Structures are given as C-alpha cells and as structure tokens.
Image (cartoon, rainbow, N blue to C red; front, side, top):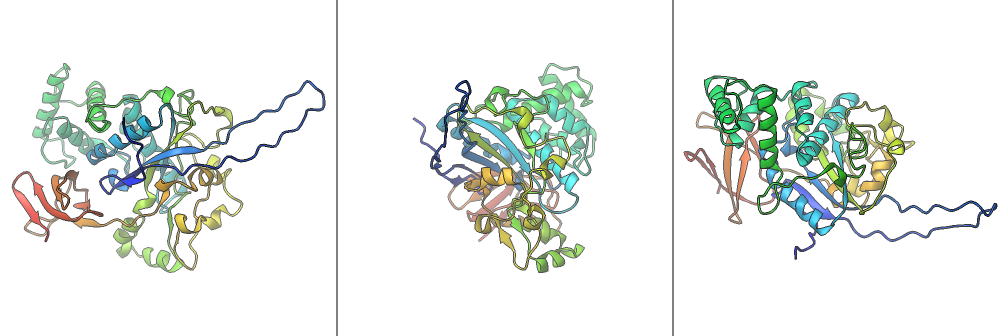
Length: 403
C-alpha cells in the first residue's frame, strides 16, 4: 500500500504535500416560513493537498516545460493515489515585474502547458507553439529539446534549424510512421508533443500517467478550461520586495539578481479537492487562462493593490499573509505548504574559456549519491539548492568538480 505523502521537496525544485486538516465549521439553519421551501447546505471549497512546479521548470518568460520537470510528476501521481477521486485545478503565477495583463496571460500559458501535458491535449500545445505571446515563443529551440528527449539528437539547442536538426526530424518522422521530409509541420509536431508529454508525465515507476478531463474540478465542461486551469498573473506573489529593494532593482544592472530573487513567485500550483466536489462554471470566480485580468481584479481584497505593493520591509506570504491581491486564491492557499517562499541557489556552468555553457544536458551527482539530469538555461545556470553538488558531467567529457 502506498504511504500517504508528507510535505516534502522533490529534487529541491518544487513541492507536493498534504494540507493540514480543516476543522469543520458550524452550520446555522432555520425553518422556512412557507413550509414549501428548503435549506441548502454546501461544503466549503477546501484543498486536500497541493503540488507545485517552480520557476526552474520554465525558462524565463516562457511557458515551455523543461525536461527536468519529468522528476516532478511522479509525486503528483503519489498524491492522487493517496487521495483517490480527488479533483484537480491548476493555477499559474508570474512574478510582479512588468505589465499586469501580459503576466496574466503568461501565467495562464504556463498553467495550460501543465494541464495539457497531463491530459495529453496536443492541440493546446500546438496553440501555445503557433501563437507566441511576447517573448514566449517556443520556436526551433523548443523542437530541438523535444527531439533530443525523444531519442533523436539535433545537436545543440541553439534555435538554428541546421542539417543536424533536419536529420533529427527525419529520424523522428520515420520512427513515428510519418512522411519523411525533414520539416516539423503540424502533423510532426502533434506526434512530437505527445511523445514528449509521455516522457514528462510519468509515475514513480517511470510509466506514463495520463489524466482525464473528468478528473479536474470542472470535469472539462468548459472548452476554455474554466475551473480546471487558470492563470493568476502577478497578483499573488509569495514575496514582496521592500521599497529600497524595489528602487535598487529598478537599475538594469541588477536585473539578474532581481529575477533570481523573484524566482519563487513564478510557479504553477495544483490543488486537489474532495471527491464529488461540484462547482458552477457560471459562478467560478477566476477568468479563463487565456482571458485578461479584469475578472481577477473583481476578486481583489478592498486593499488588494496595497497588499501587493512594496512597503518599508520585504514581506513573505507565509509570515504576513498580506501579499495576495485575490481574496479567493488567498482563502484556498492560506494553509498550503506549497505556498511557502524558499531561497534558491544557482550555479553557473562555464567552459574552459569562461563562457556560459547554455542549453546543455548535464548529469549532476549529489552528495546523497543521487544522479539528477538537468539542462542549463539560456544563461548557463542550474539550480542546486538543498543537497551538496559533488560532480557535474557533460557529454561524458567535460567534468566540473565541486569540493
């Protein structure tokens, strides 16, 4: 029998946890005056558990799920086993930098990427791929990552569709029974998306886990995913900088530090709700993931703008409970272990010339003996918080020792 998971980090990059039990509130009822009426008793919407993927699973300003996220999905499967019949809802978040409306859409795209991967909705990924939003443009580099992780090596993920990339596309097309022309068109992308989703969404035995739309809170009743998946934008940050920090981070020279400090604000959280929970799509407070932020603002606390604004000191939601602008999400997340702010430690990987080793698969040997597969980001960074890093191997040639 699978043990009920306790609050825990997985690979130091995210969390899956049970929520603390809620104390049942008293229900007040009264007789009707006509003798023909009736009282309606409704249980509150209370999450049983949560699962979170952190900012490192996405490149900065991108909704594409990096290969490392494959280590996160087995724990989601364990949560579902521990809570049979629980219904899921996905919430995407962005950091409080830049335009509110854009960050709402970016957070929604990240949430949609996770939801679509779980239910194998390749059409939603095609929509994300073919309709870029700002800097969130999947493009050739994304296809190169998909090809590599499905066993067809395109060379470096550099965004250039060269001869090696074309050969990798042809190799994939042949293996998938497609017309072999070396062009990653819609039919090829559909098969490639599905294969990569199967690579990402696995259980603890590394077997693909496929969810049904009926396992989500709204049971897939709305074509736009209302109730099942939503983006909260930058309205619910875990950390708010102080005024002095905000002023310092306004200097472009401090952008990298600002983005790193903001990292935990960029996250996707899934809440698991009681089996049998029913919601009304018409009255669900969150707008669709693809919609603007006007619907979010309707659910703000009366002091919502003040809550998410800098003050004399920096503030963390877990300490002050006053950083979320949305009162609906605040009530869902107030006791959630997945809404704790954690400082991340990053390591820059450089070659012998001191240049960043970007978009490169590496193997990390940790102090506990575990091996973790990672890919450096566009700045050559990997996240190594928690466990002590012992050795990094790249292509079985380059090694970096860390005493």
